[in-house]
Length: 263
Image (tube, rainbow, N blue to C red):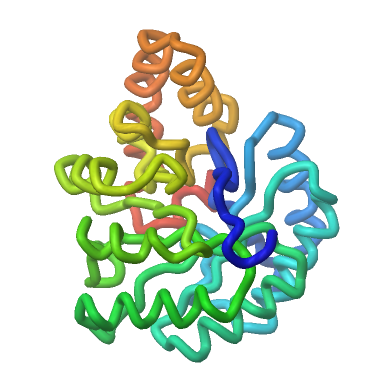
């Protein structure tokens, strides 16, 4: 996908924010391979590698690139592979994003810079600098509960004009904010839920799907919530969403990804 050509969503439906299995302090690639094949076999729509649930914050840059390359090779284009490349350093993120592109990723997930508490102008500069250096579509990731930084609707609108910024994973939990974002971006800009308990509300606002923790263990549930909604079975989608709430709550009884890794 060449720079300036982002128009279609990277995926619609459910993308699993896949955990990273470890053994003896190192990435367990045997188990990782089994998880990827299990996900694809169950009909998942995309995979996010090195996201929050994949413990990207504690992986080295080399581990991240190697993990993404492994996933890209194994999936062999059966589903899109979206690589988490966000850090609190613009230069580091841009460099890592380019390495993920070279490793064959289909897209990038870029979280807001954490700890620095950058201003709105800083957010714009951060994302535009990174987007200028890669040709892959970028999904921004707004999760202020972890980073201390929120992407406001005004800033989303500005950044959505960049040809390589294709969407946002919205995990603020603020439905009013999500509604404002949906109202101010074009139909080509993809809005994804970052919270498993808000998939249906976000789809109702024009969202394209969810980047999910739940789908690590309940692939079909996350996928079917989206599929039923898109097929017009709103009642079926709603019922699945509500039925999944106890499991979703259990997966956050401790800090993510502790519960989902245990599961």
